[in-house]
Each structure stands twice: as C-alpha cells, then as structure tokens.
Image (cartoon, rainbow, N blue to C red; front, side, top):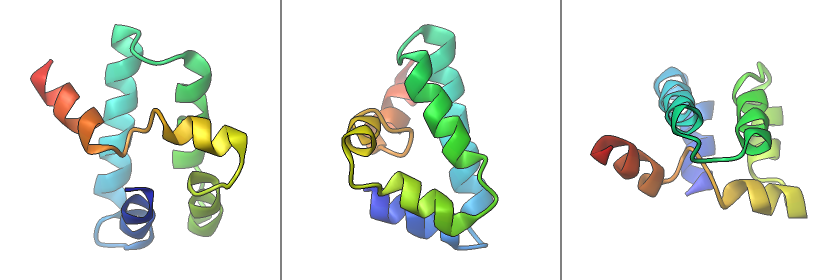
Length: 86
C-alpha cells in the first residue's frame, strides 16, 4: 500500500492528486477526532516535504515510529472508503 503511495507521489502526473487526497483524509479525521493530533501532524509534515525522496523515506521508514504511523495512514483504501461513507 505505501509503496503505491510513494510511487504516486513520485509521479508528476499523480503527485498532486495523491497528496490532495491524503490531506483531505487527514482533514476528515481531524474534524471528527478520528486520529490523534500527533499522527495527523506527522503525516502533514511528510506531505509538505518538497523533497520527494525524503518524503518517500519518511513514509517507508523502518522504525517503530514509522510502523505506528503506517497503522493509521491517509493512503489506505480503508481510510478513503470510510471517508466516503461518512
């Protein structure tokens, strides 16, 4: 899932839409209290990175923080489908 998100963010044809959709998901979660503020802030920081490779490394980071962040991701199909249902 996150490898596809990174690929979308690296591709100039899809980067803007992928980032916008992830940010929209974060706003949705934030408005409804569906994720903690720290997780939302971490994803916003990643999505604001102008260095695509730094953002890719942060998304795929092999650490406890990276793993925890990916458990509540704005790139997951569940996040997108849940947002559409609400």
